[in-house]
Image 1 (spheres, rainbow, N blue to C red):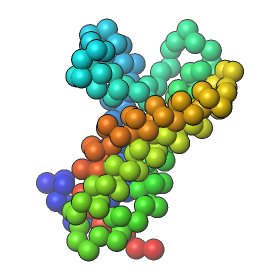
Image 2: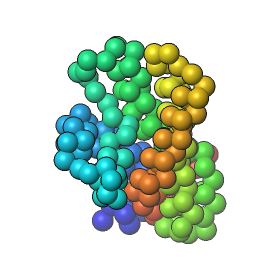
Image 3: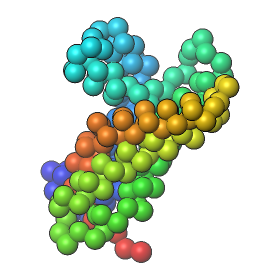
Image 4: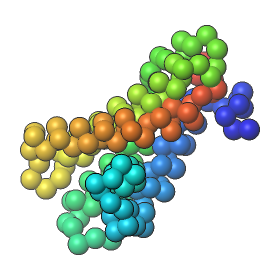
Amino acid sequence: MALTNRYKSAPGAGTLAALLLVLIFGSPWYADWARNNTDPDSAGGWFLRLLAWPAWRFDSSDSIQEIFAADLKAILVVVLTFVFLYLLPGSQLARARGTLSQLFAGWAAYVFAGALAALLTALIRTNPSLLGALQAAGDGAEYGLFTGWIVGIATLGGYRGRR
């Protein structure tokens, strides 16, 4: 069973979960489905649309700069998840693998990764502004808050590794 494998690293498992979240739910096909088939005024519809937040795309009527920013945001969410999982001390300070500190460290890493990825990519969009960057960081943190528990669960039971 993947969650109880003693050879699984917490940063690796969390990064894999983040990659799958971004690849599956950030895909153009899922984003179009969520936009066309869900009710934004219901809790389920809101959550299904939220899952598509780091949407990547390769074909759009937007400018190349906007497409690059969206794709970079999706990549940065995954990369920064690994960085924060590696740097956050919760999983390495836990006395036993599988404790709640690993869950919260994985969850927090995804919140930070979403916020920072959105903040950085908002600055390279067309007509960037400080207000737009702060609002984008808030959207990224909201995404991480409501979906980061998946990454947190994936990190449970993983070893931190040696330095």
